[in-house]
Amino acid sequence: MRTIVFLLLRVHLIYAVTHTLQYYFTATTGISNFPRLVDVGMLNGEPISMYDSTSQKKVPKQKWMAENLDYEYWNSGNEMRKARDQVFFSSIQVLMGRFNQTAEKKKLIVMRPLIILL
Image 1 (spheres, rainbow, N blue to C red):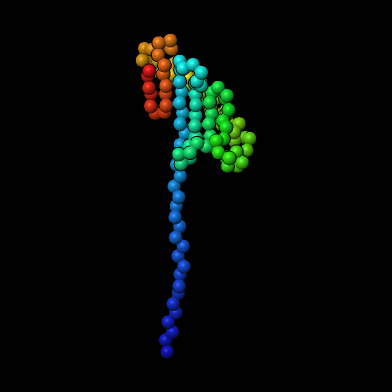
Image 2: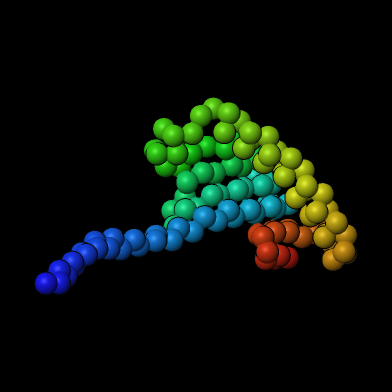
């Protein structure tokens, strides 16, 4: 007599969820009452953090960001953005020289990777 054994397997289907993390940097010159650098972090199209060169602070835009990230994260973000502000400002000066423009005549907006000369 032969015995047949059936082995039943449970298969769990795992669905991967895709998220999109993007940072938008905007550097300007010649625009009064507007910061030289604005950095907005976006997760799936929703803002999660923001830095501007006027306040020189990176701040959370979502409650879960504020609750789950410590002071050191935000402080290091501030320092990195301050350094980036200097780099962007130097780059704008070079671009204005290459376009033969002066700050008095024109405004320059740089949004990575787009450059708009007004």
